[in-house]
Length: 195
Image (cartoon, rainbow, N blue to C red; front, side, top):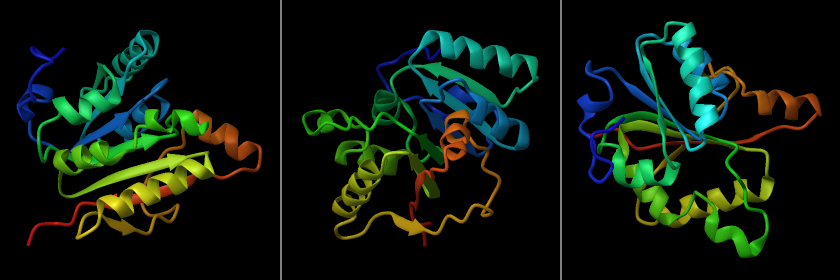
């Protein structure tokens, strides 16, 4: 639990030892996060989830697997990125299958907007990545357009993301979706390295 939810955290408040930090926004039941943390003990992982039952489940699974490199924060994803995470502290930010809010009158509720992208830019370290997946084609197009608007005059680099680029576990939702013969839309963005 952060000591104060009304200021930016210091990097050492999340994990005492300095290792690359990955953040999973809306970590759900934690299957993706648990697999990733188990595969990369040399990295730290922070799951963000607003539903208490899911947070408790992820904590139980992490404890059972002895994953000292994983923490879970019960909070809204937008607030966490825009107001809590330290600047230049995150090596990878994962956003997998967020609510697409498909009706036009609800688009203002979508997580990926200009303010959110500015906050993502702020919390990513130089060379850090924002990894996005969705099952909703129109939302994928929306995110590409929002990134293009944000990038006017510079900004994120779009990277190729072949399936074998690096170990990336599938969420339960992704397995279900692919079992129906469908494919998730992906976007891999990088804050350019300094220099």
